[in-house]
Length: 313
Image (cartoon, rainbow, N blue to C red):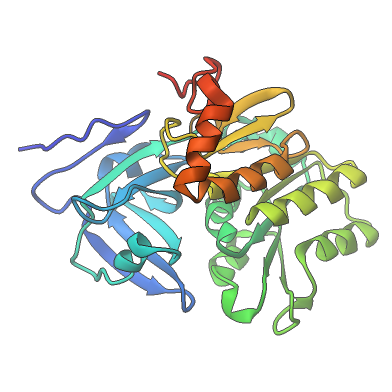
């Protein structure tokens, strides 16, 4: 008998058998974990760039997580998460054979790359920039391109060597892989923007850059790529909380429009995103007082009421 969880806007699934069972657990760093989870209906339809919402227990917090990988044959999806609070602290204790209470998805819009003509993509020079856990949503896009005969350059950056994740699978899928660490403990010493400038100074030209990572990283990548004339796409999954467009956490200004990362994105034109506003909202949203302030200030547009993003439906 199904206990169906009504999702928005993807599909949920739940059975009394092995759905949501965890079949693989891997510790990537001291605080970052990878899990393969049985979710056949999600695995059947998901595409690179989309995400799921998971709950570890009946009274657990809803956590939106990018689909890092998937196997349609095995009916599994791969999630990667960093321990940042009570819910993820609980999740890290889960073992093979344990299960999640809910997995809802696939949610969000797929990467724009999957809708492009493959022959046209093969003529493009694509650069991916991944910061920290941002390597998780970058990897499925790089893998999808590789499976379709399209190469891409990839930069993975982290504060130190122990925060570099998914290096080996990324290396297998990327045309060229460059690793940077802030402290120089591995790869090139410096931040990802240093590596971008180095590649361009060495004669590389790029038709598009896809940058995913901490908001401050994406802000400075976009500042540089705008200067270099490289169109840039960013994924704003770091600011998502509820995942349905109703909590208002991922409200962002893109150009002159109000958007919500979870229902309109998570990918947007990075040169149009108001990063300063989004970063400030992140800080304010962390407190109950701050959430009340934002709701009063933003009125009907706080949680999708603008009527443009779909968050009010």
